Length: 259
Image (cartoon, rainbow, N blue to C red):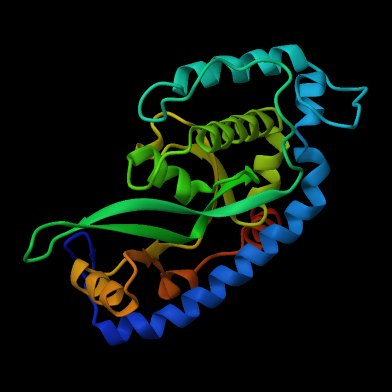
């Protein structure tokens, strides 16, 4: 169906039918990623890249380029410390300890849906796209709300979130094999920004399955029912059913008799 008001035209009942399948798919893919991340945890440890520039009871003997890595994070922090984050001071070595646990936090954006009373601001969450970050006092959603002034600001928590985001960005930049590894799971690993957080780079994992949101009217109906101004996109089940297996396609290509 054609899109309406920036979303796909459908009935409320159709949205509800697709919702259950979307949730099952999202839950399964998220579980698969978390299972792999548990195996990859040692490779994502900040200590491996920052050595004595980060507090930790463990020592790392083979950390390379730790001084250069810390200087890069220090410069990145300075570049994002202004508005809208308004972070205090400069980074000093050593950084506070960063938990080894890596989290998947749903990617969010903002929709100003049209209503008879004027635009209504709604949080749109993706079911198949996540911020990849070490655990902090606040998550991506809370950081967006604080930085935008929608909730009371906690300077210390925002600073910690920003540092953890910068550390993860550095780790991924220094680990090109991770991009190839996740691509075998049909996941793209990239760096994105959220308008509420300014230029802060966020590492994002996104499944190759398309998602969409319904028209504003359906979205507004859903949040009226839930009472919460948050709507999660739907998985495009029809498009998902036509996805090709890249491994099988490559095998078929290599095995062609006319090659």
